[in-house]
Length: 160
Figure (cartoon, rainbow, N blue to C red):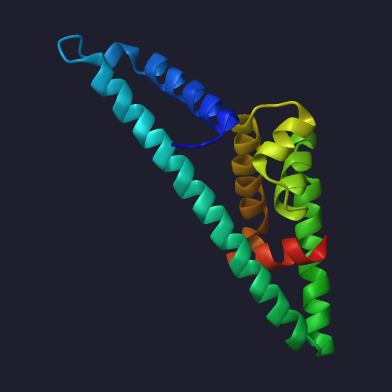
């Protein structure tokens, strides 16, 4: 289904962990193969949903950044943009070192999870965990700044 051995291995590892974590809830009266198939199917579908969401967000932000560059002329806008950029850079710099490195490679430099995993010699699931953790920390840090999420993403992609 994935047509990529690395992703298949990662999902297989996730499935094994899910089976292990839910081992006490497995009904031995029902066929295990059906249970395993459902977990695998859901994991693959989750993978595709996430990949699609990441791709859509990136394309929307890219087009929005291009439009924003054309319209960002006033001094007030430039000052606001500079302040917001500094806030975001501070939030990124406040991340734990490994989380910051993964976040910058994926979200700023636009590398795929697989590329980052290979570069840092960690699993794709670990890359995903760092991205989730980093995004959560940055959102919490920037809540007080009152910047909407799209603008935050725009500035992150545009500033570095």
